[in-house]
Length: 144
Image (cartoon, rainbow, N blue to C red; front, side, top):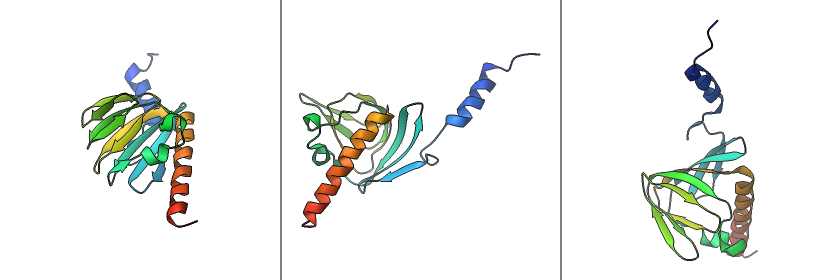
């Protein structure tokens, strides 16, 4: 009996692990942006759609180096992503693939869309710290 082709084995395996921005099961609305993501073998795949200009500097204050410590790999499909480091800044636009090592501070303009791949546990820790910063900021704005 002949073995199934590599293509048919790959199609079966990938059918179980493929996601797109519409079918991603984890949805997080941050206000200025929405993330739709999924987890694969220890990595998070996140599709981000940005509704309004957003500089993450205030959310990263208090983190080590006042910056994100999670590495990200990704691709910009629309808009513009600016990433600041201690000694330089990088600007990514549609068609640019990127790597952000730990120690970055991102800012995006309205209409930006990108897909990022990040270590799941490191991303969860970074997101938890940013959520806490958002809550503290909202409490201060509300006088609590």
